[in-house]
Length: 527
Image (cartoon, rainbow, N blue to C red):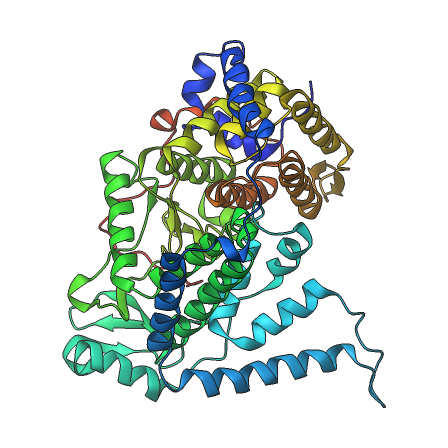
């Protein structure tokens, strides 16, 4: 049997695919006919390409309204400031690739590397845009997806005086609410920085403070990107098939949503309610939000203390069974995908922690994903087809998930998928052997994450080669599952993802640690 691709196994073996596995049946023959018939009609009568002359007066007026609105949102200061910053970013990046006297050899020019450097130097908006590229393998070329994994959202912190002014403008005098605030930030990112504090009532908290005028900068940049895409589609109507402006609109709405900390507070509270309703708050938690000290630009929440899921040595000191801990984290996340209207879409090592009491802590709910009913149903179909090694069934499931204007040959598509999955067997494991003073010998097997990522990107290539565009939400699920793949390699290298009963039934999973309920104050030192 071909070793299944881990990302789909996660979805198949947990609550997302549980229903599909409990009723395994032959693949969906009726859908082959339905899919092929519905697509063959569009293939035989392809719509003619549109030209600029086909644009209506209403379309032109709509574009003008968008341009005016973008100009108003940008304000008079945005143009000159961004022009200067763009000049600096472009000139500095060019110098990286040009030979200079007395300096080591210049870097070899690479478009993805150059674009990533420009984005980092352009600041907050483009760093976030780079992260969007990195998390969207279904939308962007794989060489850019891989390179933009390096686009780190870490910036020099602003002076305490500046941050203090924002806090007092939003909450009033600091002395009325907080007994102390650490002037040195725990973290500083493009949009906000985080400070440790203590309330007058004695609780340890963290304060996430939005940087001044960052909302103006983001709105101006994102509106420009959106309008530019609209202009390109207006001038080249056939580009509408690429959904360029729809992608730009998705980027704009998702990034602007991150600016509203009250929305993030609501996400945290909804996740805590999910844990409570499913009796999971002795296994996992999220920080308590202090609503009375939270606004659109300041978020005050319980401080949690713990270690990253990549810190195997520290986890072993906290819990007796690190394998059970990662299984709990995986089960909680996948159950949230299936039962909540959104899912945590940024579960990197800094946002998923093992707390001092053994529970798993989920933090930073600024980025969330939403799975449409269509995609959710197709993922279940994909899981069932994968379990049966029915590659044509997988092709049909992906057709049901994606968008296409052309006929898709599902037999050829299925063979292409089989070839990609066969390539997973080519991934060579790294075998590590260690001997100890007592004479015992231990070994572990690991896989190069970059090779696994390449396999996943090959699936995206195959779908596009067969005329399909998969939704970004599917790419977000893939991204999060890659994180869990990494955690499993570290904490449970020998885990049978398919056969281990602990993965399929979260309700029967053993309690982890000695959690005392979700209202206890616990801290997270990697905030």
